[in-house]
Length: 295
Image (cartoon, rainbow, N blue to C red; front, side, top):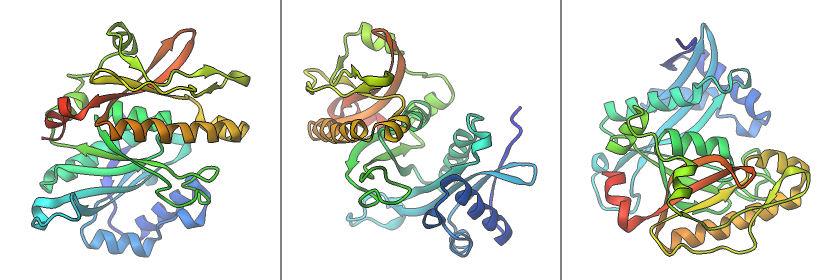
């Protein structure tokens, strides 16, 4: 049984603890959503979830209400979504399933409110985030945003970039329910490879055990393909900024090309292949799959 418990934050003292947790995680005051903002959002109905180990706040998830289609002339109730803005987990409790449990609680909140869509952003090069968001939660991605948070000079950027995926989590979708209940775990890397799914950008070995992106991007001739990312982009950014920049620019090219051609991210898979640990996003053509992913 998990030690932690998930419940909504509601008091100013709890908001102070959420601010302290953010300071610890990001070590950047500009990244902190302050208690007076948090309490105002909570009292206006925004769900703010906390993971607790006894009376210690070890995880925090902030959401607010937004519009599914901001430019659409639809009544707000039919256009409402939940925007997942900030999640922080105490580093001492990493890999304890806290982020996953916070997202599950967020899903229950959304369903209780009659909301079918939750959105958020994440860095496409972060393999751990990809595994949680795409593989475990069953979210999809249809949009790649360049420099979402500006030129990368803040804690939310890296070496001049803050590119992000715009994640869509259709929480009432049957595929999401199957993924969360382990009734649909997804194919393994071996199964994708056995089906001869194209790897659009196979990586190449580089110095110090790193990998570098392919010099050529091959657009898929079928409705399914895979896009490779490195497993350890944080180490690459610290140790080899030029290689990190090469990966960043490569990601822009490959995902913008794939999305423009009508593909969407539908899975994430990792495993051992060709003598190395590999990490891939799986993309599917929207014409073939979109209807059953968002309804």
